[in-house]
Image (cartoon, rainbow, N blue to C red; front, side, top):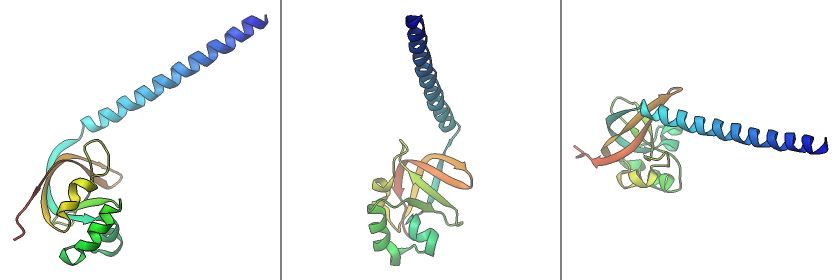
Length: 135
C-alpha cells in the first residue's frame, strides 16, 4: 500500500509538471499570435526621451543633451509625430530600442516597424530607422 501511495504521488507530480509546461507553451504561442496581428507601419517624428516629454513636455534641440543622457541611462525612448501622437519604441525582439534611436535624439526620423496598441499605449517595434532632413 505504501508503494501505491508513493507511485500515485510521483504520478501526480509528473502530471502537474506536464500541465504547467503545456500552459507555459500555450502562453508563448498566444504571445506570438498577438504580434502576428501587428501591422507594419511607417512613422515619422522626433526621437524623444519619454520620461522628460511625458512629465514636462520637454523635447527639441534645446533638450537634446538631457534626452541623450536619459536614453543612454535606460529611460524609455519614443517617437513624437507632428500631430502629437507618441509611440513607445522597442527593439524587434521586445528589448529596449535605446541603442537604435540615441544617435537621432531630437531629430526627425522615419521608423519602419510593427505597431501595436493596448490600453491607450502605442508601441512600435523598430525594424529600420532613417534620418529625415530637418527642414
